[in-house]
Image 1 (cartoon, rainbow, N blue to C red):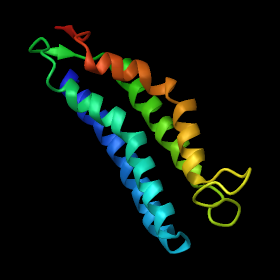
Image 2 (tube, rainbow, N blue to C red; image 1 turned 90 degrees about the horizontal axis):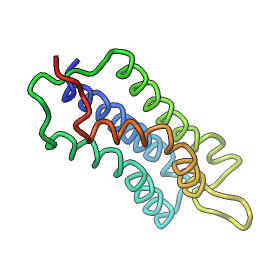
Image 3 (cartoon, one colour; image 1 turned 180 degrees about the vertical axis):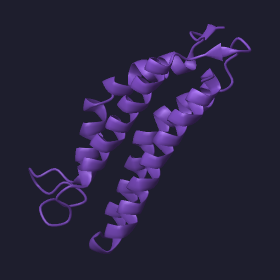
Length: 140
């Protein structure tokens, strides 16, 4: 697979994660008040902005014409990105029964859980995004 296609596949994974989190937010919006919903929308966008922005920028980095990505590397990249997306999606578990949209005293809300979890699992995608945004693909 070419480097550009790898970027497109990874972009699709992160865009799907953004979309799923958006739909979950829409599903639960009746349980939220307006400020909480706005904060959650901002946080969901903020968490997904970095990987989507890096991958979009990576499309403009000059690469050799026929740069190929080894299948094993592609599999690892997609798997790590999917794990990242699933772990972020688990931030919603327990809402609205056990957790609320924003923090309430010592109990973190979805917004805080999403922020913390995004930081905790960012190592999964850091190397992938570095590779995707660089000129490291080999030419055949």
